[in-house]
Length: 152
Ligand SMILES: [Zn+2]
Image (cartoon, helix red, strand yellow):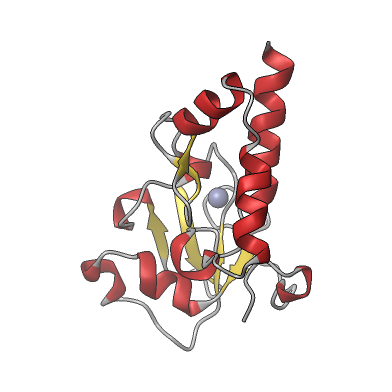
């Protein structure tokens, strides 16, 4: 499956985060299986639907549709862009574009978005197993790059 194709936005079933009440975005089980630490992975219920909370003020990363489970960033093998404002955190996980690297590229007048798009078009991206949100990073990268340009 092409994780960055617009048609791949899985089912639109939305459930609210039990911690902050905002709507989560459903994620595939493979994303949790790839990115949860073993001790947390041992507790997932594969029959449940899981969702990702994008709210940066909320500590919950994943929660189950039944609300019986939540996972925070410390359950993850990687830092989570939406939950962690450190400059070393990836915005694009597949090709390791951290905030630092994006800042550098923009100040060198490079276009990181073009670079990432090229890889996506060549079908090299694997957001469902690399990115905690389980889907394409491009929206986050564009928003971040835009924020850099308006801050100049
Ligand atoms: Zn939340």
